Structure formats: structure tokens, C-alpha cells
Length: 335
Image 1 (tube, rainbow, N blue to C red):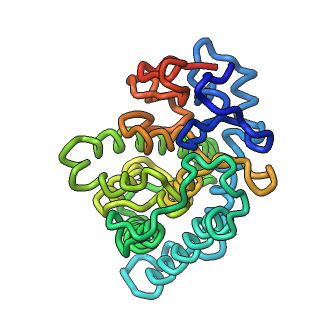
Image 2: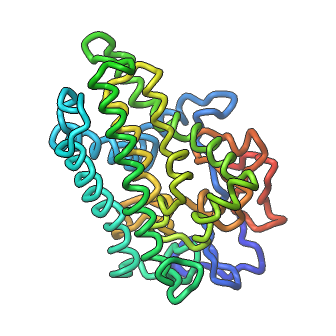
């Protein structure tokens, strides 16, 4: 694909293109995973599953590992959760607080405090807003930290506390490895796909004008998102977004499945909102989501993610190419 004539040529250290405003885009259109392509291409699907980066790693495997460590070393025993007691609830809250600061804070430290990547691959060349009346404390980062590690953290912990209480009192269906090993493993692979399906429809819902005006507007103040923007939401939006875990209240699952689903939803937005296209860390860590940045940039497109092509199916897909050079909302897939 050749660059459009109005776009400055990329510098050698930064593949991609910047327009006259300095906004960056990759040198290729946004692509979907081959999982739902037709006709099915088995070899492409296997490459997508096992290559690096791909479906399994780094993102999903990293979040799975975090959940496994949480489950074995920091999670209160389910039997202990049969009664609402301060000890185990505080244990969960403090664990989630530390986890959020380590995960979101690592991106913030590397990209925005140390500025170790400079503006290489930064979608918007500007740094987070300061002295702006648009944000709490007149500072975008402080605002985002408040909504993410303050408000969203409480909702996250609330979902976990209530669901563990339900498991402990046998009020929701459980699932054990010994009895159903195939379904146990299948659930782990299905959770990221379920998350995408749920996210698309919740996201469409909160773009309904009344909800957008009173709820989702808060998240969209971040037209130039940073590492703390992912969960910087109105509490109503956070409740809707994390309701992805309510499936475990009706479909048999192990508490670990629930934990993986919840932590995937709570931590995943960090890598999709930090405002950079990877790889970072000297080219070793693929990260970033230009697909989702386009939603923050243009609002009425790319409501979902890039595995399940719901935006393509429902006509809300934008591929990131300049208008007139392939960017479209009709959802045509481009390789």
C-alpha cells in the first residue's frame, strides 16, 4: 500500500505515517483475526493462535498468569467467603489496588513519566492535558487515576465480593475440574471471546444518546487517552462494563473462571488505552490498540475489538486509512 500524498513520509525509527497535525497511524489498515473469516483458513487460524503476538500471547497469557498467581497466592478460600466479613473483603480490595497500580502504573511510568519511547508510535503527539477545566483537579492524569483506581476499583471489588459470597453459599452453579475437564479448559479459551461480544453490545448501549450524555461522556473526555484512561468511567458505565462476569451466575463455572474473566476486564483496558502502538521495551512487547484509538478519535465506530468482527458485521468498522483511501464504515475487511 502506498502512502497518501498528503501524509509526511515516516522516519526510519517509526513505521507508519503522521498527518499534518502530527497524528500517527500504522502503515496498514486495521485487521481482524482470521477466526471468523470465510472460507475458514485452518493454517491462518493456527498461526493466529500460536504466533507471537497472537491470541494466546502476550496479552491473554499474561492476564491468565496474573489470575493464576492471584488465585493461588492472594485469593481468600471460597469457604471463608460464606459471610460478609471485613477481613477477606479488605484482602481482596488491597490485592486489587496493588494489582491495578502495578499494571496501569507500569505503562504510565514507562510511557509518560520516563517517556522511554518518546512519541514513537504515539497516536496523538500531545501529552495528557494539564490545567484543563475539562478534568477533575484540572489534570487529565489525576482525573483518570481517580476514576480508575478510586471509583472503578470499588466496583471491581464489589463484583468479586458478591460473587464469592454466592459461590460460598452455593447460590450459583459451580464447575469442578475433576468432573468436567474439557469444559473447564474450554471456558478459559472462551472468556476472551465472550468479553468481546459483551463489550460490543454494552458499548453500543452506552452510546445511546441519554446514556452517552449522562454516563459515557466522562470516558470520552479522553480523546487523547493515556495509561490511566482505560477504566476512567462513570460508575454506571463501570457497573455495565464489568457485568460481563454475570454470566458466571447462570452458566456453571469454577470461581477461577470468574476471577480470570473479572481481572481480564479490569486490567485489559490498560494496554488498549495507553495511547501508543507497540512494540515497546526495545521492540519486545507488542501492545496498543489503534482500532480502539479510532473510536476515541471518531466516536461512532469500532465499538468492539479485533477478534470477533462485530463492527464489520454491523457496519460500524473503520480501518484507519485516510478518508477516500479505504477507510470505511461499511465494514469491508481488508488484508
